[in-house]
Image (cartoon, rainbow, N blue to C red; front, top):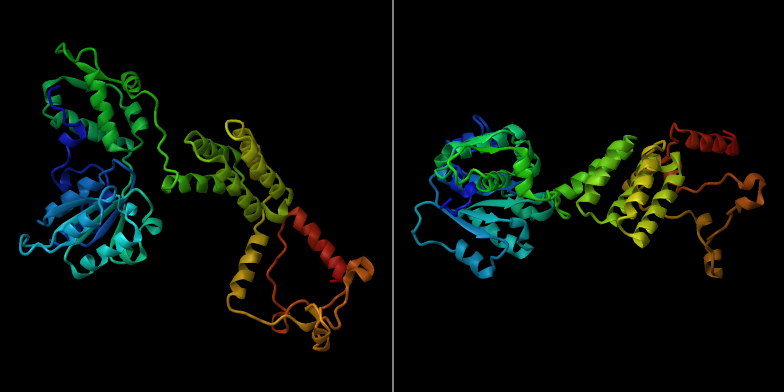
Length: 422
């Protein structure tokens, strides 16, 4: 093969109609498609994993509205480059340019703020691309001036369409007789990344034994796996995938599905997630989702955290797995979680003074002012209980905690009802 330009670059779509996937954004009668037919393009942020077309779509959108396209990489752009891009062009362009900022989440706050004025005035139309969740990585001020669109990884059918298009349209591949016997491995290894899928196809074709023999080249799962080597697990420890997987694990525990929880746990561990991070999430789950239905769950989770920190991988996987299974199979209750949230919400607006009898009268002056007066020490009475008011007067009927319908909390409810004679 004489052309050293990668296949993904050679067959990059030249119009919106050639884009495969992202039909929710670029399909007929979708908002963006309808907007650009009016020759208008708002400032937008494209959010999604690598290799699913953010740069290509940005270029095609600018082309669709006949606007000049300028690029800026947040990875290596400094203040000088940013100023040059934002500088007025003194009539060089008849229309304000579309400025594409790749990896916009890498811009610090000051750099992102520098874009605000140009976007606000219409001097530029900004298209930002990010693999991170914009809600966490892009300034709110910039977000409010942009529309955010999520791009999705390509599904198996779309990856197959990308591969078929490459075989039919690429000039280099057109010189060969290529047949895809199975693309399952390409899809699984690419994980919806069109660029990686095309790279794998090109490697499989170029490494084929028949490449220089003018014979048919058959691409199948075996030769794809052979050229791919080990599959790299897609996982960004500071990105969406990081939070999506741990969210799935916690929701599986909450839903009492130990098998699903173990699967998501294994996904994170295989990808190299910090086991201590996982253990901390288990501690939170033990209190939030299990709580008083099984108080031992918090002890188990906390012990797991301490053990993981002292043991480390690979043995930490055993500790995490044991703790997860215990939590998933425990009875569930969020009554204490709801109670503290309710109390915190009230505390934001209510600043009722502490009743005098609950205050410590540590000095004679305090005692003279009534601090601690009439306080009754419960341990001096039968069953270590004496009925007295602990809430401020205006909140005396307020209830934050409601007993759950599980065995442990119902036993506590029965005890309190007996103790208070209710």
